[in-house]
Amino acid sequence: MGVVNVKRGELEELATGKSSKPSPKTLDACPECGSSNIIMDYSKGELICGDCGLVISSHVMDRGPEWRAFTQEEREERTRVGIPISYSVHDKGLSTVITRVNRDAFGRELPLDTRLRMLRLRKWQIRSRVHSSIERNLSQAMAELDRLSDKLNIPPPVKERAALIYRKALDKGLVRGRSIAAIAAASLYAACRQTETPRTLKEVAEVSIISKKDIARCYRLLLKELDLRMPIADPVKCVSKIASKVGIGEKCQQIAIDILRKAQEVKAASGKDPMGLAAAALYIACTMEKERKTQKEIAEAANVTEVTIRNRYNGLKKALGLNF
Image (cartoon, rainbow, N blue to C red; front, side, top):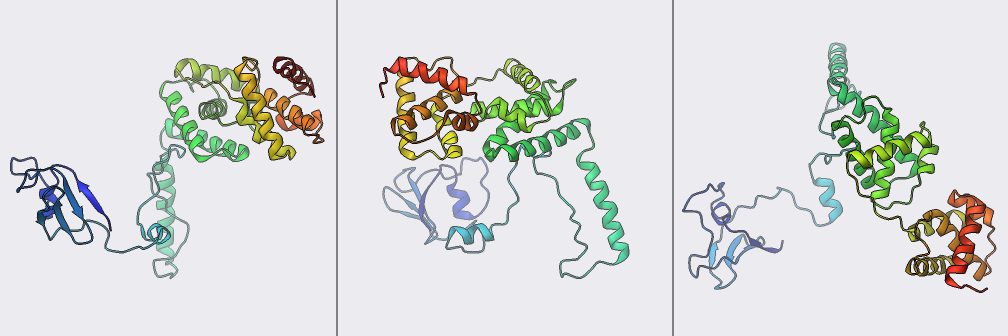
């Protein structure tokens, strides 16, 4: 184990093994030189002054686990803790679950009367988890968020942020009179915008049961009522997504990123759809490197039209003075 510094006010607790209470007798400095630079040596169980070297205590109680682990994998296997609190679960993962395995701790099958009692307990435990209207609302919304996140390959941190946005909307009463699926989809899209995850509104609408128009309306409502601040979309982050779908090489991707950087410097990317700009930059890079990719292939990967790519292509070519 290593050597760590000890905060002031914790010496008495470490030296005696008892919980410290606010009192004038609490040690907060070295009794020899008065220094507060106290070091805890876990390998020897000693409290040492970092300035004068005085051993304040040589029998410090180790408050760690009784087991030892020499690798991170072994530590994770032996750690006895529950799952962390998750906003994407309607009860934040704090409730218990009675499983359907009708066996005891030794693997023996339970008697009939015990199985019937467990059945009744399981039924009432499930009912108690969602006994209020708010919990039922959250249960449906979190299930919809899980489904959308799975369809769109959303990372877990983004899903957690979307769940937090939905909970804020529920607290302010924005879900009342509106579709739960629409607010959930709008929350997910808002979380993608906040974290700059390249997911468009059209992609969210395609996997949702709600139309794009309704999701956009709920998204504007969330922006207004929750005072959300969205960063400006960066088309550079959309390049790898489009290139991976079409199979464009790394060199063309780097050229497309350089083109977009130059376009941002000359203010040629302002007010333009980031997906359309990224698709046009990739098409220009493929043309320069003679990589045979059609406008139709790139447009389908970017989920835009070929007309958009041609317009952005002409705009970038004119703004940057490209000749090829």
